[in-house]
Amino acid sequence: MTIDDGRVPAGPLASIAGLAPLLVFSNSLSLGVALGIAFFLAYSAAGAMALLLPARLGRPAVFAFSLTGAAVVASLTASALRLFDPFLFEAAYGRVFLSVFTLPVLRACVMPETVSDRERAIESLLWGVGYAFLTAVTGAVRQFLATGAVSTRFGAEHGSLLPIFAQPAGAFILIALAAAAFKVVIKAVRGSES
Amino acid sequence: MDVSDKTRDTWILAIAMALIVAASGFASAYASGQAARQLAKAASEAPGPSARGEAAWTTLREGSVLGRVDKRGEPAAYLVVARYPDGEFRAAASVDGDGSILDLRPLGDSGDAYSKRLAALFSGAGKGASRADASTLDASLKALVTDTLETLAALERGRTEAEDDD
Image (cartoon, rainbow over all chains, first blue to last red; front, side, top):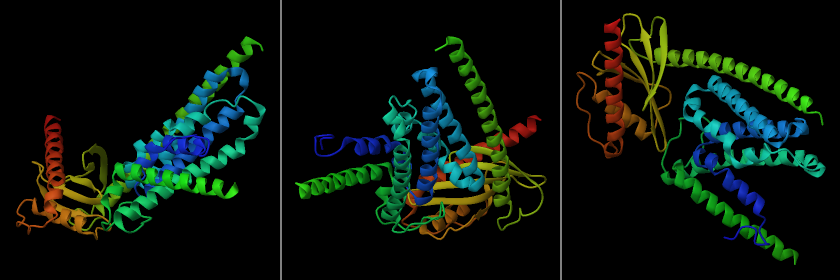
């Protein structure tokens, strides 16, 4: 599939590809929700710092402070997760810190250049909600496809339907199917407009 | 733009960030202590002979062994979290000095076939246990069980040797 071929917008597809490290590890609802929340908090912290820090610090310093802020927020999220469910923390803590290095968070750390970029902060926040939701939904869908059921309790997954969807390969299959479906929908919408 | 203003702002931000990082470290240490308490409680309150007394938790994270609960005058209990493709099996295993399982107590819900089979295999590997019946799941679980038993034996040998040195 050609990205940004004039018919399919590249932004959402590139962001999904940038989220792949999280989507690969999100193989159950509880893990997906934990990773989604960790991602959203890190993304919001990075975006807020890049927006609010004084421009006179310069782009490299703003990027470094925003990334450090996102890492601190990821650490606090991991601590909260540890208090909430120690078993879930043991399965997820390494992946929580991975969220800091995903493409959307790194992009949010970059200082907005123009006034119009700054005015799109709410839009960026909504995209963050969407990415977090996507991570959680991916976990739920993969759990359903792998076990035939969705459980809100971590470690209580039972049954076996298509076990490959619990493996990392399952995430890539799901991403490919979602990207293909997305392209078909966009084409259908554009076709109906013309 | 004044260069000294930029330097001053950078220093103020760096100090603020250092304070936030330190606060995050304290939060992490607190969460670690609370989680240790919860895990020690989970392992100690499982049905079985080791249900009394104050327990001290040590996080290990060696393969499927999450940590150890030490109780005065009782065999050490290890918290085992064995992950398989569709879920995970949690159990508290009491071991003797050479790492052989004396008693295994599954924790929480273990209703699926893999969990039940893992409980049977771990229990069957214990001292004085009768040989468990064979199952079609054994081939896929054998490596997991063997690795966990070897890890338990190595950890317990290390612990007893360290105690002897003291």
